Length: 391
Image (tube, rainbow, N blue to C red):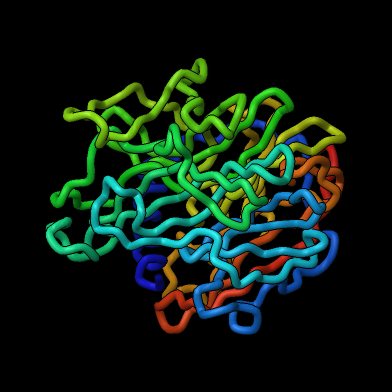
């Protein structure tokens, strides 16, 4: 995992430089500020079950049928965090979704991470899985040696009928977002769709954002997906720049996978979107993400926020927390990296924590760096924030 994080960070620098589009030229409609001090919600060394329970994705949360807060975001051996409220979570050691390390890329069972959830009733849960195929770990599957040169990523759909206590593959529409070609031993670079945001709703539709690495006919960037029902994963459609028309399919189900119409990247996101919530008092959207410093868009590395009235047009980002991120050089981190930001409404209505009043929690991971190596010594941090209308 340390090698994975380091390679991903180095590759992300190149992708951001190549793929970043111009930010929207208007100020955010919301201002975000600290409403307290950061606290450690989960300390992996103190609270983990077997050494795998480290924050390795943005926190996702829901309320089950008993009203408990249930959250995910702990590595490829997936376990729940459970508590009476979102600020009182503890790790449950029961594995809810494992990773099979299967060497067949068509099986989509190498490294699985729960990265988005949705429930209407607290019982049936739709989940989006960030699936990594590390071809370098499987003999004959990659002509290169490093993980980054051999990494193929796909977003798949799983479902739970017990409030997130266990997950099974979705019977239909299992592949939600995939590159329109198969994994190849001559790959040479990271490819595919990866890191979906949380699933969030405008009342009528449900949405998520996901990054793609770019390929012929497809620009690198973050794409927006929509459906009326997340429990029908085959119904997800990506934004093409005018409408939600693009359906992705499993490239292994056809003898001749073909390039499909490209999704239109959404600016100003240079990397995966951590989370999106709707601010109920203003009706505006608020998104958080991490970014490396550059000389044009992001003055400092850290966690940024942006706002929108229309999900396709976002404001100029503003810095929320400065700090070396997973996309920066770990050798220059000073021993600590921040990553995987997520927003959770402290007083969210409904079951999915996709909306907030004026108070919310920013969850993020801190990672200890030893020399130039990002370690598994990680904590999940909960930071209370205040949201106000106006910039």
